Image (cartoon, rainbow, N blue to C red; front, side):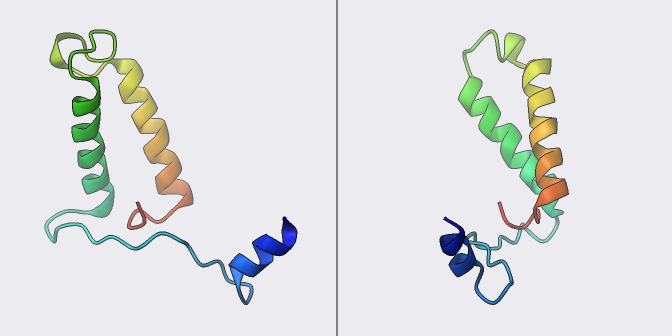
Length: 81
């Protein structure tokens, strides 16, 4: 396992397997990621009264989104999502 990890890291620098993403010019990466997540959550939970009562995402869903976005903002580049 350790050898595999070292081989993936190359010359001591981590090479991310994810491509960089450039949001539309008028949007900041973190704002655009949040927008995409909200659209996806609305699509995913449409018709689910527990997760989206009265057509609005529940507080539980919004809290989870905030936690996940905070992890991304803290640990990763927002242009690598």
